[in-house]
Structures are given as C-alpha cells and as structure tokens.
Image (tube, rainbow, N blue to C red):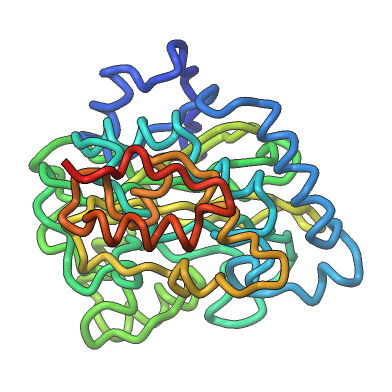
Length: 339
C-alpha cells in the first residue's frame, strides 16, 4: 500500500491558524509554509550549499551519521543561521502551540545538516531508512507528560524538495485519545528500557521480532499507518517528542538539506540541550557570540536563557555589570532596568 502524502498548509497571516494549532495538539504534527521570510531562507540555503559537499561528490560519500558535526549549529558565526533559529514568527508559532509566551520558551537544539541518498545501509545504526521512533529518549531525562500538557516542540525546516530527492519524513497521525498507536507509556521502540538502540528499520524490527515479538507486532501497525511529508522548500514540520515518526530513504545520489530545531517551556528543565552551552562560544577571535548577544532582541535573549526583564537577577549592580560586558557590542540595558 502506498503511504498517504501530506502537503503543507500556507500560513496566511504570519501566525499559525487555530486549525493548524489544533492539528499539532491533537494529531501530533502540523506542516506549514510561509512562516519564514523567503529571502532569509535563500540566504541560509546559499550558506548551506557552500558548507556541505554536493550530492554525488567524493566528499559526500564520506559523510555519515546525524547533524552537521558543528558546521551549522547555534550559536553560529553566521548571523543568518541565528536569525532563522530565533525568527520572531517562528518563536510565536512555537509559543502558540505550547500555549505560552515567547519569553517562556527555551532553545535546546538548532542544527542544519545534509542527508545523502545511498543504495545500501552501512550498519544497523544507519539513518538511511530509520525505524519508527519517538524523540524524547535522547532529548529528555524523563517521559513526556500526558498528551494534553506538551512541554516541547520539534521542528524540521526543509530546504530541499522531496520530489527531487525523496527522503520524506513519515509520521503516524494520532486519531484521538483512545488511539491504540499512542498507548501509554510510549516505550515501544528500541533504545528504551532494556532494549538496545538500533536505528535501521530492517535491523530494528528483526531484533524486536526476536526480543519482544508483541512489540514488533504493535510496531507493524505503525508502519501501516504512516503518512509521508511531501515537503517543498520552506516547509516547516512541527511535531512533538511523543509523535511516532521516522526518516525514509533518499534517492540514491541525492542530498537533502534540513534544519532541526527544538524548543521547550522554561519550566521543563529535564528536557536537555543537545549542544554545548551557548556561553561556550564566548572568547572566539571574532567575538561573534558577544556581538550576537549585544544585537539580539529581548525575546531572542530570553529563549537563549538570558534573564528576562523583571527577573530577580536584575539589580542596579548586575545591570551595570552586564552592560560593562556587552555594552560595547550594542547591548541596550533599558528593558532590564529594575523597578
């Protein structure tokens, strides 16, 4: 049976509609386009194409695994990358999904990376044809709360076209509170409990058929229900840590460019940051991080974990000290003036 295709909905007012928000909250995902300025996306695409090996090149054959290996992660010396990561419309969309304010969001992941099409898998940990999974185990120290109290949003911003390169993300839409695919707790995947982590679909399902046959049978129904994201450039897939999904094979010799981001609510401290702490980027020769702090908006700083206006941290003394550190880079202390 050919999987159903999902196509994006256009964001018409610069903000997610109530139907798009409800889709994310109920089904576990929303696919939209038009949220981020196309000119910014083009700048980012130009940078990504200059950063990563071309499809079919000898260098591309050596690229394995996940992520950009630090080439394009937050914070970046490339301002365009930071601007898209903390884009105001994107942050508002995340806040709307979580039912909170932008100041109550925290960034935990931002990484733009290439995936290359290969005809054969390289190992049982290959991400070529992924096993069905949820993302919380390597993002959170615990288990996601009940469905109606989400604490994080994951995003994939696509810079490629699935018609050209394949590699569609597959999701299992949740049909309602009693959906058997989302039985509680959500632990039916390798890498959870005493099951070892296996990423490749064929290897994972063979392992589970022997180790946990009931689980393997349950998962077979997930694959039968999966729908494929027929992405085009500018599409933004918003999903949850407890949404069943997986990556599917790219066409051989193709390259897909996509930007993964994750945001949590500030109180969910158990949702881990996947990269080194942002302050680790200080002391670079070009001082790109300090410059970014100086020029960022109040909301952008908040999402990085910078104390918000009104926070008890801000006193006359601390404000003067922070201004001494960042004032030369354009930092405006006015919003942080203690009452």
